[in-house]
Length: 490
Image (cartoon, rainbow, N blue to C red; front, top):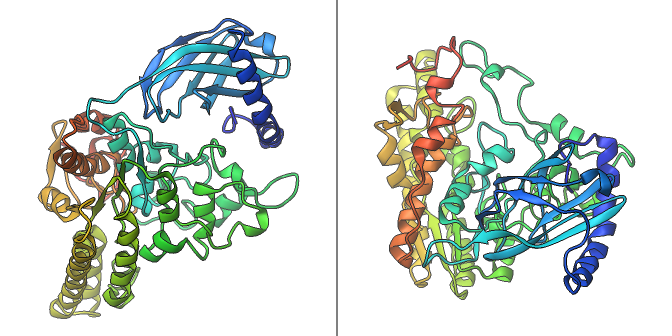
């Protein structure tokens, strides 16, 4: 739908119905009009071109009053999002296109439809960059930040940075802004403890997803454009088993919002019947990648509130056969797949905080706590060995060294003249002490770009990390004053 975020809930429901009933009719109208030239009001568009990645704002001018109540607005057959009409002007965000070329703009209202042919161009990526891309995995790949996800975090997560630099379409399943809002500094006390009841949770999900008309879940409310078929099919919380065989349990709700938001309300929390790997096989992209495939089978060991929990790591003996099955399927496809290993998550600030607390309370000695750290690190190394063994038979599967990224930033890194660290609120890790910031994701994306360029011979330009940092709300210099964990102003 065009104006999901900016419409009231009462207006959204008719728009959903318009979209369902009207898309087929509009498609037929476009086909007919294609034989007879432009129809409707004149339009001007600025800018008149963009990369295939999209996520670019355009401004269109025309006599929109003549069209009545606008219900549909597409460029290249893909609906725009975040459309804001003001008199004869509308600004909207493009969602990209799968192939370069000149495309139509279609705007339909209650009193008529405008079709303008070949007025917008999607540019080809740099020579040598393949066109068809997909991403799969869990919360890093999806674009989670500060224990939440919204269009900003999706557009500045690692996957989006990769696709933006490559100039390729990735079909981001943009979430409604209110669905799972990331934590903000004002959700914390001055001692950097999260205030109870803040952040995303069941209440925010129910508020956004419940239809005022039926009282039932309607997952289409969870997306800015529920009609878009995602090419980034990653789902936060997904394990290796979930990626391979379909997401199950409570997190299936999130999976349905990402990949089939029009599921019947009775199946909203039912297990997926089409897995991420099924979806990858169906599209068979030129390039696929996963930035965190192993993450959720390991990270529960370091995110518990009271202690480290190496026993919560999925046994390697369980993981390795799943990887073998997954890679046997990906190995048959024509494209190249770039898959990250796992760093030792014991570098996270949460682990340092736990060590300090438990030693002070007498719950652990230095030796007993460090033994748990070593156990987690050893199991992580075993995971990475299993990943290498499972990938080895297939030349189209390529490893990306996530640990090397961590090694690069452990001692801090200077971006835009500011020193960033992996400490709490240090500018590289977001407010949940697990996921990265915009800048952290940009630096991680560069690891993938370097590997993709080396393997494919493409010349994807570097991520402009300094530009990302300059707008990053979690850079230390932009954080509000008065928090004990925030680094001193530089």
